[in-house]
Length: 221
Image (tube, rainbow, N blue to C red):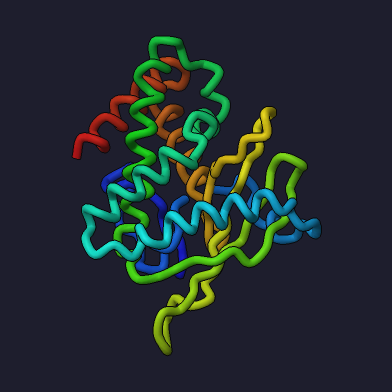
């Protein structure tokens, strides 16, 4: 199961993700380096992810799309550090955002990002994930690996690995900041697209205004 292009419907490019892409919700800021790190993450990150999956797996097994979408939205709001992600995806332009733009951008990005998670998981039903291990990037930045548990013989999604980036803030609070598979990561993909929109519209405040306008059209659909 692969992440192809992890985008919200109509966002800057083709909207569809394959069923293989639908296994993960979106996390890591490094790509190849993540998989070569030798150290194992502390047990707290793995236990944090296990607790999330305990809540998430029943959501993924919900019978209706509306139930899944509602459940995913609640999980995103509870466990994803949306503020940190929303700044990361702006890259160097985050320092150029005005206070007035921030008041519009932050709630708008939260809505947009939740929509991305929902869309990515739209076709995901009847599967379950389990924690298989982890690596530390830094004492506060870990990658927790999970795999899909096949629900029937010949399940094509069985044993697919999904990676989650877990960040610990200065107070010791853990949160998801990205998710990935097949070396494609939600936040990195979004940053590439957001920076492109800003740069193509003059950069700085003007470019950020263009990004905000584009996000407004996407979340309104």
